[in-house]
Length: 411
Ligand code: MLT
Image 1 (cartoon, helix red, strand yellow):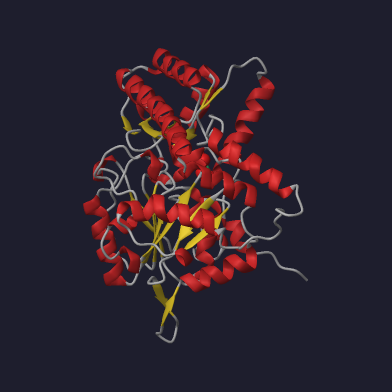
Image 2 (image 1 turned 180 degrees about the vertical axis):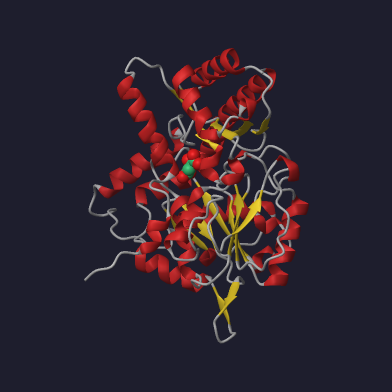
């Protein structure tokens, strides 16, 4: 008799973005004429940088010749990519990261979802509310939580409210926590944590023996000079923090898949008999057992974003999306809506007009102006009454969407 992992049964039926896709597909089928503008899932719309395309084409040629063909690569990633990552994202900022502290992967969704496997099942997890659903759902699947309660929270999880009242900078909880997920710039709210706030979290982690799981997938979108680009800018973070980075939003790799995780060898957690165990070798063991390396062709494409041509292109792409963010932010503000984010991140987090429930606003927006966004409640109970729009759309679509919202929902 095979038994199922009943933790899966604690989860709501489908993953947030799968549920949105399902609703939109049903609407489209019923209204094939609808001119739908999609500002829901944060998926890029600009093509890959030419520098990456050229590098990948060259890599394809290499794969077609016996002398240059490559089979299995190093699970942790090719040296050429790891060296480029360290030089451009860390050394150039005065930060120390060693070669064997970087693990190249197929993206931050997988890494932020899988990292919990190297932690004990009875660890207490803290997440912000609202939150990128992957952190929570994967811990539910792993049995690190109780059941879903009526208030929309899972038993056994510490939720850190992140809202306008606390300037989207959660306060330190009174309960003990073992694993803390932070996302900065934040998905979904598009806001950031200040250097001061991050310094407090690192101090907290040191004092309470907590590991910070820091998702910096949107770091390339930071425009304000004082916002940290990496948790390792904070003194002491190399002892307590794991950082996740992605080429998806940085360089348009959502469909190509490439990201990496940094685990300094100085980050440790306890064994039950009280010894300190570095996490780096555990992740290395997991990665080499369960992952066979990101495709050589893809890693060559990722490496190319660090060439002068690649850097120029990705900066232009990011500027394009951030101009979309400005258009949405300013347009909706003019319409009288309350908006957050969109300055250091490609997400705009708005309060629904007339305190409408998030999913009601989702349906209204889809039915009345054919726009798809993401209901805030899908990211956690504190997201109720909020709504997320992405700046990753096409410029013309973004402008049309803002006009449609202004016409219909000005307050
Ligand atoms: C989002 O829309 O939140 C992101 O696209 C999700 C992701 O990167 O997996």
